[in-house]
Image (cartoon, rainbow, N blue to C red):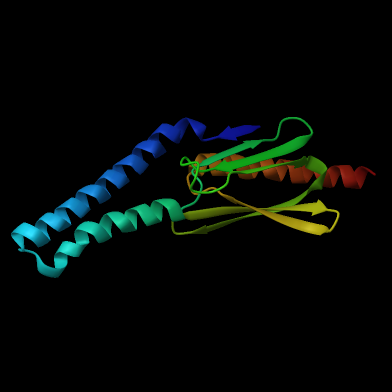
Length: 159
């Protein structure tokens, strides 16, 4: 199964650009208020604070693009940001038989996927940011991962 929200990259780029423009306009409005009008007082700082908070929330939400591929004998996970210099992209590929379990963590609008795999040094936990997946995409991902776990357990029981 393949899952990707790469088609939404233009939307995320638009939101990013709009938030940056909102911040720039807020800074200009703040300086215009402070230098010329002087009507608002301390409330003028909201011109900068509100856009800054929105940008912080957008970036704290994690990497926007998530790709998953379970076709073949390996699992592929890719997670990247739309702004290349903001964070390093994650790309992991490992055989299906090494996949042990997964957990999803959801808090407000933050979603994370924790994958546990067998490695030479014990179990390794890989973390992916899936905040920008829809509920349907998230359910499809969980279904596919559960299917891989089930197949792994059947292979162990057959041996």
